[in-house]
Image (tube, rainbow, N blue to C red; front, side, top):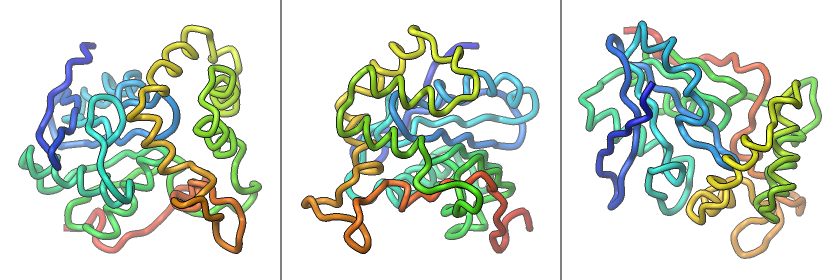
Length: 230
């Protein structure tokens, strides 16, 4: 399947996205982290979903070919998704969000339930119950943004998969090239830096983890007023 992207203007820059298939609109929002783009996350899923839905798969701000935004990356990303919906004339849609994308979907649903028809979060909302926090993956992300080396991104990728054979040299090279793009690296630093702006520690004097903002969990179950109702 072709990876051709379209763009719409937003906040002095652009939002790049894939638009594949026909039917009810389905937004697929990717996660954050080194080397992430919409197509990198969802290339294997889009052909299946596109048989049933119009799949809108954006590069979120600061990733891939979408322009970065100033200020809070979470509120700004929600604004960007809403702007893309408006630009495409989509009043209401279904959403699938992975990790950071799951958080964006959840907050969008909480703030704008009239725009969300169905919502699926993959490790993107909630707090951990059975696992230590921060997760190993979050720790590896923080290490990468502090020291963006090929070794660090390899450690992160290996922490994210059960079958370590998936992490090939080709995958590492591809993700490392994208992850060290200055715009993408700065976007990830906003989310996963251990320090607040100005070098302050986190809550109660502890080093801040970006996950204190996104709180991924393995149980994505959540309820939002108005979601799925008409």
